[in-house]
Amino acid sequence: MRGFLGATVRAEAARDARLLSLIAIGTRGDARNLERTLDQFNDKATGHADFRSNR
Image (cartoon, rainbow, N blue to C red):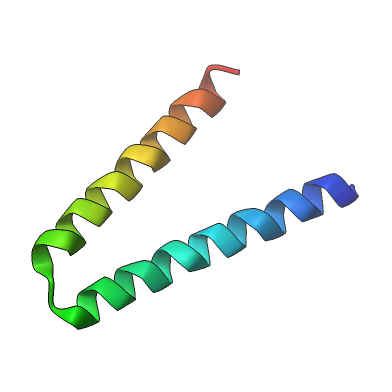
């Protein structure tokens, strides 16, 4: 049970870090960087979802 809770906390922390990165990029007004970062996050999320479905 502790392992599951630890993994959940780490996943939430990673999600929070990604959101903060997007906010930081957005506040700088660099739309090109924001678009590229969103694409990278979407690619990673899709890759992780595909990996989980193949397990």
